[in-house]
Amino acid sequence: MSVSASENNNIILKEQLPQTMQLEQLALPTATYVSLQLQNGNLEIAESDTNHNVVAYEKELLDADANEAALNWLKQAAQEHNLQFVAASLRDGDFAPDLAAKLWMQEDIVPLRAEARVDQSATAEDLVRQVRLQFDHNDLVQVPLTADREVVVSELVTIEDYRSTVTPEDFEMISQLAQKFEGKRLVFINATPQGGGVALMRHALIRLLRLFGVDAHWHILLPKKEVFDITKTKIHNVLQNVASPSTELTEEDKDVYLSWSQENALALDSVFKQANVIVIDDPQPAGLIPYIREANPDCKILYRSHIQIVADLATEEGTPQHTTWSFLWNFIRHADYFISHPMKMFVPDNVPAEKVLYMPATTDPVDGLNKPLSEKQMETYLKLFNKILIQEGQTPLDTERPYIVQIARFDPSKGIPDVLDAYRQLRHMLAEEQKPIPQLVIAGNGSIDDPDGVPVFSLIKRILQTEPYIDFAHDIKVARLPHRDQILNTLLRKSEVVLQLSIKEGFEVKVTEALLKGKPVVAYRVGGIPLQIQDNITGYLVETGNTSQVAKHLFDLLTDEMLYGSMSSAAATLANRDYLTIPNAICWLYLATAMLDEENIQGNYQWVKALAMLNAEEIAA
Image: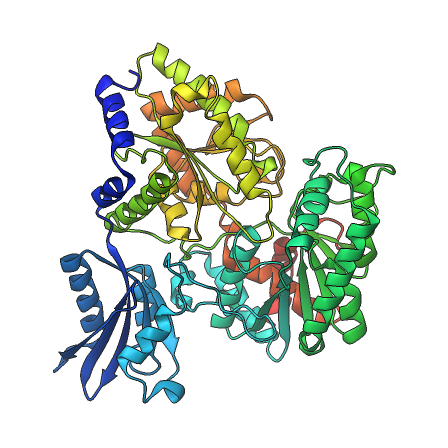
């Protein structure tokens, strides 16, 4: 059946309620922060709410285990007072080493370490105030940077939390490679510490490498809106062929990019000189490569391309793609290797084959996007999602009704108009058969180097105010989300089916994130998506633009319980574990150690992980 009269009345009622009343009805837990320390055999606790009010508590431990006492206090306080502890400060040496991981994995609290040698005299109240300052008024972490723009990565888990995510062979290999790399430094450079897949991968990778004792660092470029407008619109979008045909990189644009590259090279000069291996992520920092060569001739340089370059246009003279690519290639050609997503069509012909290696995008099994969440935790994140919708003037998601979801940045390449069209057709098909109609959620994060986000988001909202969408726009939830990864995690876990209708794509590891959660994915056959979905087994691959076929697959999954159960089970079981953080770390450490040993790796479009496995005996030696 279609949406009932009572549901329609409920929608109208919610629209008529004042926004403040709708927000009150959510009964959101109060976000709060805490510090935990041991003093004279007692557990000292200080709590700070969003208004920076601090309350201190003291609990006598007697013979109780300090870790268990801390966890029990947090659970009880959260339950009794409807609180959500966002982060907790732990003083070094006060608690067993695994408390931080338990806070993160079980209680969904970000653990922050207070160094004992600095803070021994600090009170619990002092420590909680320091914690509170690391988060903004929306309780979002402000990623800390050092003076030389190094990203300070959170310590969330232990090595043991990763062990079960991969095969014993992979776990052994990462351990061996970490030992071989001892005494060397690996550096990654990209544009932004938050937003988009590259930043997510780097947070996870650096966190993991440090657990294994690897001297790994991640630095970001100086932010400059003028440059990010150029790199997104005239480089990224042009190379993917999603910009208008008249969009072309001008000489003035090139001068702006070159000047900015020089500015960054000066800021990062000491970083270049201390590194043994540097990875350049995407076009934004590509202009640094000649400066690295000059500052540190012995440094090995890897260029990692994360985007779908339309390679045939990039080497066709007279095209905007050729103009952009020729400019970038002047820098990239000085790198030792060109690492692409595993699709030959992403690699321009003028990149020498011996330099080309393949690596997939990856996701982290224990970060906020993928770690297990309790029903209570997911309930909180759905309330947070509904708060965002209400503040945007939308009706909240009805958590009693099913929904379909696409998680992606608001980018011209993500095919959001196709998502809307497929949903329109699905509604018609379900109504004809008098079947329940699901809601549609379209959500994604923003990023400082992505100026497309606001215009695309605004375009989608305008489309929903026109025929035929205006009649059922209340069932479509569109949200640009803050960087609370657990909201995306929850939206995937609670969905029925996941869509990924990108018209151009690099790899889009969101597909694997959905599969890991047992969600069938219906996606366009573009970029690296076919490397993740087993067609008709874990999801469906559809030719770009065929929204009627997308609607048919959605209809089948929503109306055939046996089909859905089989596909959901297969998705969780068959999701490729090579697209996780440990295999990613194996790739980087294998390349780094082999290059520093002066091994002559012939790229020739080989998968780096496969090369590492072929050399397993040598690595173990």
